[in-house]
Length: 260
Image 1 (cartoon, one colour):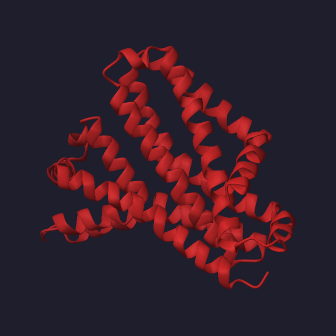
Image 2 (cartoon, rainbow, N blue to C red; image 1 turned 180 degrees about the vertical axis):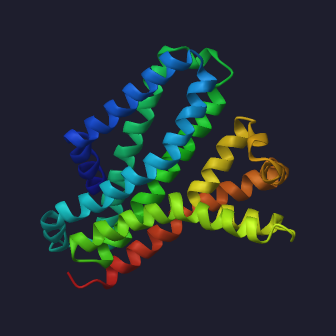
């Protein structure tokens, strides 16, 4: 499996898409630091880009890589290798290369601006951790979609639909329910709905770390009361980990049963 991880990782690192992804974040971070002229403002702006763009790119890259490397995958399947090792290796290679582009693209301008001498280093670290977690989560979801759909148009369609559902539609339904049932106690419902969406969970974790949860009003106070505690931090970290493990488990199970 290590050889497959290594091949997938360097295959994508050398591609022009990977260079474009890296340069996009490099330029974005440089421009934000130039415009904000401080680390805190740039990190807050990057949060919104991070939680929307990272899942979209990971989903599209994951689906695209699976369909484009189908012939190579079939060649590997003809070898005496475990299916779970082949697909897990490809998944880790892709997610690893995307994470590297994200961390280096944002990290180099911030490091040059003096991040390591600033108190903002831990805020930036939580931004990077949630970005890497979202990359691994949505890459595994993309692999699940691609493995379940032979037709690549359907695969891309379902992948974009999934991203749209979790990034946009979910929040709309969530706010509609809060407004419709505002007379009832909704604290537990709000917490449960947040941890069931990895994008919302990442957003709350970054907001609490940046200490700007007051922007969320009463809901922010509820989130801070729960996620600001040690129990809340452990539970939220476990939920993000679960969002990585469960799709990966299903991907391995689907790959074992699939007739290639």
